[in-house]
Length: 138
Length: 138
Length: 138
Image 1: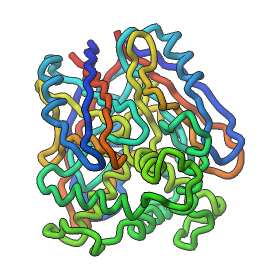
Image 2: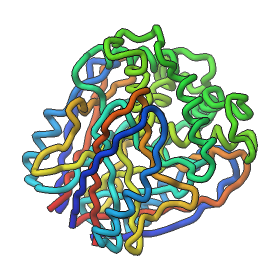
Image 3: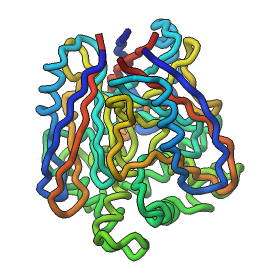
Image 4: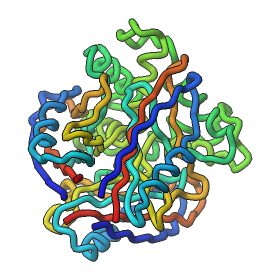
């Protein structure tokens, strides 16, 4: 059995947004006892990631790391027509994930205690982002 | 229902190859309405990645970024018996993906407008690469 | 059909541990002919990765690369309360994978010749790590 849901999210610009509760709602609706929950982001300049969910400094430190690793306006790049933060956003996406799969156990997302599901906007400005949730199981 | 296909590809050497049309053929053949398409690359010196599919400069910029991050012939490494581009290829693989999962909706790969599926050869020379496609759904 | 198993592993501290045989046991038990094997690690400071399984120098070189890319005690970070190796461990996790999916073909894990499944402990000290294995197929 495969159930599929689609939702959109308007990001406020670069940064990590916790979407765990939103995803949990679909898992609850799908009513699967044992299975998997797959998330897919339909974009190449934002990511999905599992991140520590307790201290917001972890998120700002991840941002600081990525900014140092793939700085905006890097003169390395030739694809610059879409702005100084566009190619770094593609790099960040390739280094992280566009999809996540989380086990479903006893009708619930089986996340670790400190794991949250995050949409990571890499572009500086606000963007509308589309996610497909596919839940399978028995 | 799980359908599995295997195919091989000979790469021309380092670089990204768009395999979206090849994968779409298997999805079409599997005739699944709602489900998932899983791709798996059986190698540790090449990757599968979702990349911007419009401007080829994005691909060459990703190459430039990786070459700076994990340069060939880096004196950091001790595993050098297989050539100066071997260990950097393992690093690139670990930093990217060996498998991808894409939703299938209405019998089609539900990719975003700008998402293409790419095989990323990290070795400098041509290699034969093996991919397994597993399609599941209702 | 979805079968789910959970197991724990106490790591000896930072480094890669080959868990391929352990995972193969669950695949054998699930008795699925064609399908997928999903692994999920319930932590944000350790990873799952497919790594070259022949030369242990590949693993120590991956460690050396990560130590250079995300050094312990980096003054970039503000999340430092849990020790100098904690934030670098979150960074390493985000740059690698918390889950893996491997095809099952003819009742076996369809890994490439040189692919092994590794748990990558990023913290310096020993930790107990929890993994969920979900096997689906026909």
